[in-house]
Image (cartoon, helix red, strand yellow):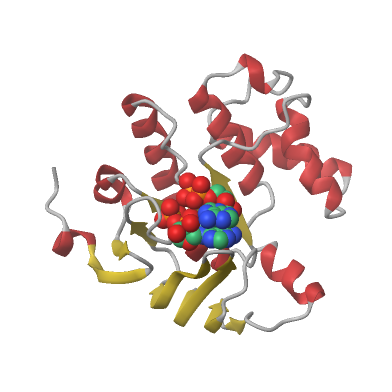
Length: 232
Ligand code: ADP
Ligand code: ADP
């Protein structure tokens, strides 16, 4: 589903070249929940940005669903990106838009018709358990509820892959637990492949089938979660 082969990405700065990721190879199978764990600065964000095609690798290849996206046209890129949803630590909701509009606006931009938009907003708000919050503004919601809206927004594009960038890092332990359960449900019931990055071991232990451990831009260990971490 996602295959990175010998991917490196470095940034040129005034202080010189920073190798953010260095010769990383990994493969995420369809239907799997794959986690990348590491401390701040390990290269996790850069890695996930390469998968989301927001960043292009300096060397190496990225294959999404059998298609090499390392050097594709902008038009192709848009098509592939539509198959990928993403959620973030800071939720990235529009403060001045209702829950409905937060989910609907990206759909309008991709030419989904009004009837279909209504249907999808309804469907995905129900899946995340917020069907009564159509007209609320983000400021009226808790952190967990905001993340649920962000998840509904990502799902409404009907992606094959959901990427999560520290999606539970701003949440308390109880809320984290409920969001992780939601991600499991999405994976199991909708069959969506999930790749997430985190610095929290409990996130990996709770929902990831496999894990890659990153340090200083490299994967230092990779395998089944049960083989790498004992269950708590
Ligand atoms: P993580 O997500 O694990 O915290 P990052 O991928 O954000 O790690 O960063 C890895 C390294 O690459 C860090 O040293 C960071 O400062 C550097 N880096 C990331 N993005 C950029 C950028 N756009 N320009 C320069 N350096 C960057
Ligand atoms: P995270 O908490 O996800 O690791 P960061 O604070 O490392 O996020 O990075 C936030 C954004 O800033 C990212 O887009 C990253 O690419 C960019 N960035 C990170 N480090 C640097 C840096 N040293 N110089 C320029 N941009 C950077």
